[in-house]
Length: 86
Image (cartoon, rainbow, N blue to C red; front, side, top):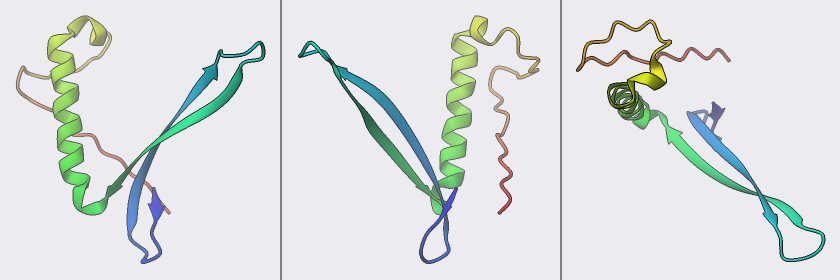
């Protein structure tokens, strides 16, 4: 979580991916960064979509989640709660 100059909170999700260039005898290494900025007006929509995605994954790949102790029914989605103190 970060705060904008106006004092509004937003979520910054960054993926850093190592890239190795194999074009020479000594490979060059650099990192590609991909960022997602999520603002407060989209938190609920993002959370809902993420919960639906997790429910879909559990329904379609139950073996991947066999160690979970969830008692989800086929159509229910457990909310994901994040608590961040500043």
